[in-house]
Image (cartoon, rainbow, N blue to C red; front, side, top):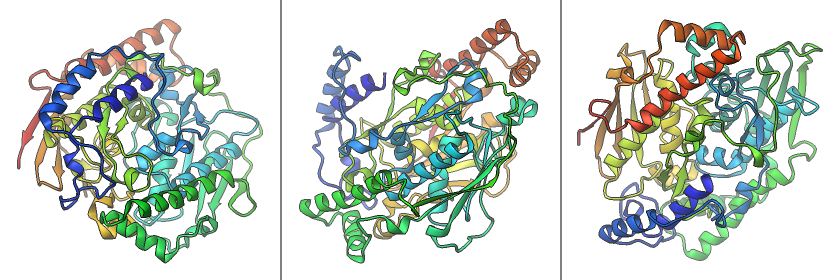
Length: 514
């Protein structure tokens, strides 16, 4: 289904209006030019393309101009939530290109975060054992706003499910079984550590056995070297001042650094894994012990709707200046599901909040631009469901909290490349009831501002006391197959209710402020 949507999307965007990325705007992407077309023609062509028969059997259209991004082997993860919600009874592949979409670019650091996670999981789960999300805690080597800690941490969280304050508290499932708690399983230091990045060590703990390993990443040895001249060229690209030849040369340099990490991951002294505690010799019983692993290419969701939600198309300026793609990129609902660890009425709600806000900010077929959007959250990051929604909104828009990329030389040259603190949470919980919570989205190049509220209490089927009790029973592994099957239907019906009724009066309320 991704292939189908990607094929459609790339056909459509060839005629979409890309004026949101015109270099004249203060925070617009200074990029190698992309073909544009007038809004009227674009709208007409979109309607024609959308009615053409495109089948999954057609040759796949490549999304990336850098093939390595989609060639990195996935990391297979067991997700207990998928199991108890009837969404997958086998391990789920997490792909590097999904981490790239989250980060907004591929580089030596994103590749490094991927390998850090891979090596830690291989040490914690040896001999082909599949890692379990929610069963892993991570101690970061610095503060969440300390570069590159938060940037690497976001990718580690995406794969392992070990989340900071924004993570899911687990509700009734977490009350029954700690495996379903995700909040505060990624712990950052309160203050910057001041540790040089090559000395930063990430500590991973497997919570069921107590085994603990540390991984550090000597990123200083990556080549080609990031010279002052290369940094100056990066700033020039961010300002839109580089020639086509300079841009092409820089793209080779930048992506060669990422590829160096993958090609030399086992080089002595590059990634160092230290075992601090061996943990239990036998693995304790688990509710996911029967979950099987299949080849990534054979994986499919047990709930078809997860891949049937149309993607949200986004322009990413980093992809453009790094030569990774010059086209809008599809962000898929199933990627948000992988980040959240499950599909539910809240995840479909966060997805729809984002879609509606972007449609209001970028009307008439304009493609939204990551980095050009700021978001004000309606509560604190550890206030339910604020942080859970915020993570999904960040994934799509690029508007990140304290963990976001500061932009380095690119951000100094152009605010479009700064991602940190473009998602602003309140310092303290607001105490606002979830149906009254309003997310405020601002388009930074025009000043347009919209608010979106989501009246989630109208979702059916209703979460009755009996349903809540059954959720706890499932989390403890005590439900019968018949009870589990009934719960699967109830849970996923709530998620699909949101998608099917998104235009219902009073469900999602969009208010234009500026």
